[in-house]
Image (cartoon, rainbow, N blue to C red; front, side, top):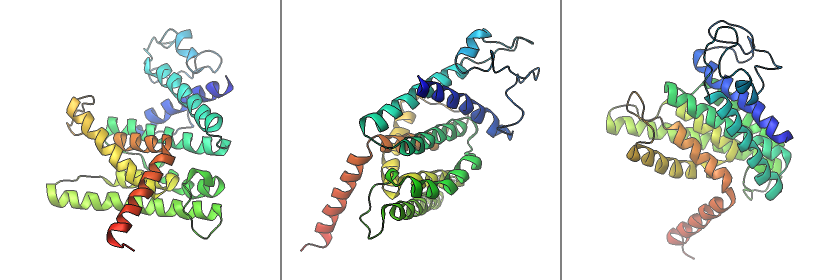
Length: 275
């Protein structure tokens, strides 16, 4: 129950991030309020995650402005996700609490950036730049979030270096893809927001994640376009949501995916450098 309540509170903050960041508003001030009459919401009744929407019957008590049902839905789904993440990482896999907080925080940052990208075709620097700054520090403090590299260095230093390599690999790869795409198609294929977004992912998950993020993300993006699940006003589908889902999939299946990548690398070595 404690984890569920924590997840619901995080979901409430996620709603704030998705609404305020694209509009250039502060995430901390003013406190939660009605966008129409500016009345500050009470923490006792109106601003309680999930329950608050039902207590006020889906509208502002002072001006009657409707409150979107998506607010409690996001809070509930976030709470369920946080609980599932805790059970999977801490309960089933035996990961540390720090590992749980690092990966769950990254996943929620990915979701927020993906939703904002769908709405505005922009990925906020406030998410990606902060993520890239924090990633090496978190990697050093919680080295288990990175797969072992087998380098002659202690675990924390390996994770720190893996974070830097992952950021460089992710940002560099997307930048090159963007340049080549512009040369081939005559228009921008990947924006600089995508460069920082994938750099953030690489910083938390290592270079191995970049490979699978693009493989899984490209497949999902193609599926979304073909079946018409996501339609946008401009016709083009932002790449961040499918890339983000690819990164989350890597977090779920990190060990088998890293093993597959290592096996593929071994196969290539035998092809080009047989003993």
